[in-house]
Amino acid sequence: MKNREIILWTINIALIGAIILYFVINSNSTQNTSKVTVKNQPTKSLPTKKVSISTNTNTNIAPKNNTISTTPSYSLAEVSQHNNETSCWTVVSGKIYDITSYIYSHPAGVDRILQGCGVDATRMYGRVGAHDVSRLSNVFVGNLK
Ligand code: HEM
Image (cartoon, rainbow, N blue to C red; front, side):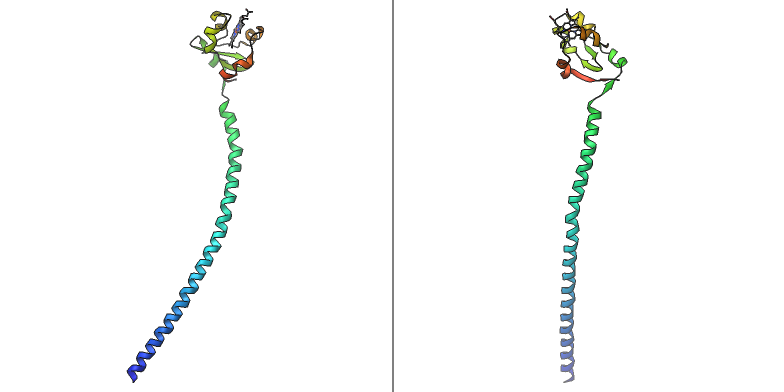
């Protein structure tokens, strides 16, 4: 009888223990899921904030960098090194143009156009009515310092 009672008690204790364990595990898992949902809420809202900040900073920085890097400037000393038919830079109204490709097709002759290579040709260029600065936009090199 005593042995049976002991066995029954141990079974009871084991059952109660199992039930308690079940509830403990269940309560932990529900807490975890609730934590996950709580964690998910801020992570959902964070990316939208980050994206708006990053695009703002990009749009603020990109145009400034582009405008600086796409318009180089050179001194007249640098322009003067391009003073022959192999490399002919000229200055017209503060802007530098590489007119090398026009030399042998110049209507008034090669010698005339070569006079403008490596120098500020604003006056020479301006004297001729047929000259049009807008034609030179495709050979624009940069601004004169
Ligand atoms: C900056 C360098 C240049 C100088 C010093 C220069 C000089 C001259 C001179 C002295 C004339 C003759 C004007 C006359 O006889 O009445 C002329 C004519 C002309 N040049 Fe230039 N030139 C230059 C660049 C250019 C370039 C880059 C072009 C083309 C994009 C060009 C196109 C012409 C044309 C179309 C004429 C008129 C020809 C005619 O009326 O028959 N020139 N140039």
